[in-house]
Amino acid sequence: MKEKLPDPDQVIKTVSQVTRLCLSLKKARLESEREELLSRYNSYLESQGQAEPPDHEAILIGFHECWLGGDFESILKTAKTLPEDFLVRHPEIQAYIKQAARK
Image (tube, rainbow, N blue to C red; front, side):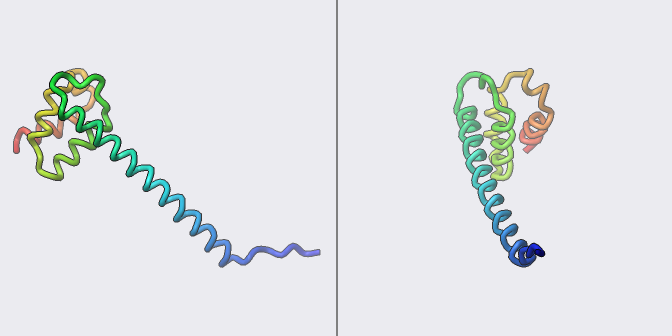
């Protein structure tokens, strides 16, 4: 007895639906993580002393958002709270700070 194969159009439709669902879930997870990172960045921005221990991703996304918004003062204010060894390890953070200082 010959086994009947599934309809290729139906298979493609099902795979497309699953892919859309996965992408939607991933987008929601990334947005949630982004909000959490921005919240951590805001705590660094508001801190009076050194930010211990700084979260590289939070600082990076916060600096990026400040840069897009033209808020160079916040970048410079946050930079003052970051330990020197953190800055040495992360040249991309240093680049934001140097560029913000030029604005």
